[in-house]
Length: 238
Image (tube, rainbow, N blue to C red; front, side, top):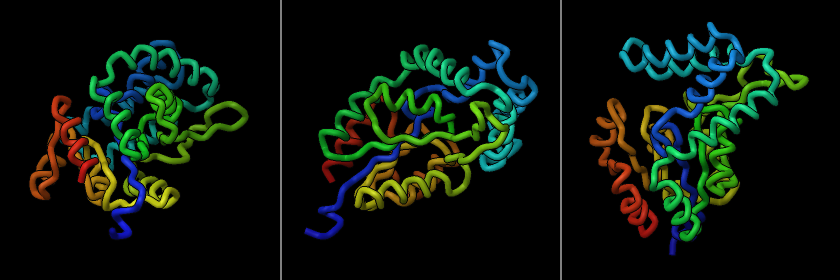
């Protein structure tokens, strides 16, 4: 038995468009706008940046940079307890839309001794609720700076920025003595490319270009909401 064969394994899991059909951070932002919380112009700027990406007018890193700055600005001077309460209410609606495979996926990882790690660019206030709902102890979302109970308008950490998810995965795996060559990544977009590229069991979920093209070129399994558990079982058995 080699060192890698005996090492622990982790599975880094994306949320937006992967475990959930929606971007949960945008859903939270929509609820903020509905309730008059935060800066309306900054909320609009987030939505504009997402629209420009979808139209092909900007690339993914530019979208992340614009959304990070605008999201932080939207939160500026808002009481954190209001956002936590709103996230809780929003998640109670969003949890009904989780893909059906998600809870069985977490159970299978646990049965196989693989530690799930949920990482998303959506705010940690709502990412943590999803993780807790699934019984997953380890998660990271975007973290916005709070001082004296209010958001400052700055972002401490954005997982979707270049190198963000990769840094988190390497730290997480190292802390658990896990071999990335035996670990799993499940993601659907450009922000997941860096972690898909370093694990031994990458699973590309219902991706569009450019990730779909890269997956085909590299021979990565392309999975969907119907067959993903079959592919996870294969990854766990190999």
